[in-house]
Image 1 (cartoon, rainbow, N blue to C red):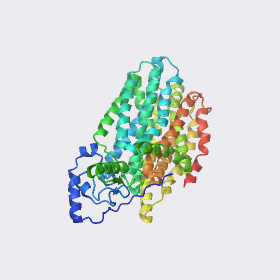
Image 2: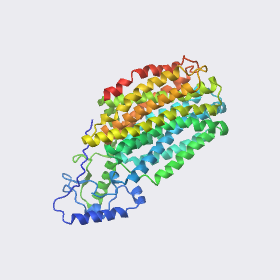
Image 3: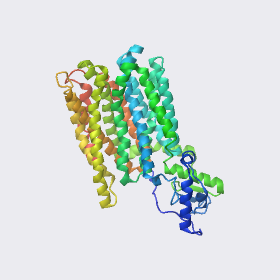
Image 4: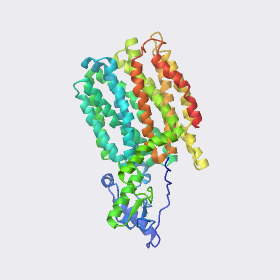
Length: 512
């Protein structure tokens, strides 16, 4: 695997530079304050008079180029953003991921109307969910390396705009084939924020600050799937499936407009590379980013090839990455398997109205929310360890995952053996909450662990994780439809992952 560049926080100085450092710093600060928010959005290089006049190590030749770094006081440095600005960016990135996750499962509330409208079987209709999520396996192969090559901002805006277009197309689809194909394409482009939002956490925050931000970002794609069926259950019953798709288009459309005017580029290697390129054009000397190899003059095609292969290299050469990705794929596949199972268990078997049966997902949502509260409290332990030792190892993120690894199979077995009509309805709902709690503990802990371990390549890690979990989901959703899950205590579609889940807890223990 490629070596992760060392981040040197000391300001570089070029020998022979004359001037009062205090005056330079003051002028730099004044120059930074003049840079408007709109300028930061459209001009990623950020080359002003102070950037040109700054002293960089090197001689400006091909053999010894100037090494470009951020200025000591630089409003283009993502790590130097104000705390308020960082949290606004992370909140918007998390919200964009939440909406994508919401869109992935909101289709389930519209499924009965889709089946009636196009006169197809439930197995065909549910492809609108499974193929959407299967698109998550395709998109990250491109969006992660593209974001590391061209930056998070451009990739997000282009893919999210495409997601809006596909949601509009789904709302006006005239046949089931068009609807399913558009849903697959929407999932492919919609996977970008799921990959890049986590990478933005590593872009903006130092490890000691990263815990709460990671929890906020990573909880969004977990809560979104559980809330999607609830909202769409009521909307689909009263207004029809086209309005459900219309709601998806409205939410994604509003989100892309807000982010276009609020979220700047956050990936430092891209920002510095563009600054170096612009300085080279302006001055005629050779400048390169501190993240680039002095001897390398790789073209964009070669850089893209390297970035495209990086997720595979990390997956094959890093057993921890592979085990973590497989684990997350398993629990995500099980989560999405439950979405078409709930209407069978609570609507068909217990006779609940479709919109009321969607409320059964609240148990899972509450379980997830409780785990998020627990993890926020656990940040005190991590912060105390960091302050005591100077640098907490990534493995210190994993103790909550060990708890979650036990809760997952317990919740699944509990749910599988109590979903019959002779058992009180609250019992399987509580069981789903236990499963949801374990899912959050495992997912967020492993996400924080991987971000801390491979910060600068967080997008590549996200690509590999999303691909495997999408494959798990794509197989899990139709699988449960092919099983008669409404038979009490004979729910093979639910018990099967229970048995697999028993073997999963050692993964978190092995990593630790």
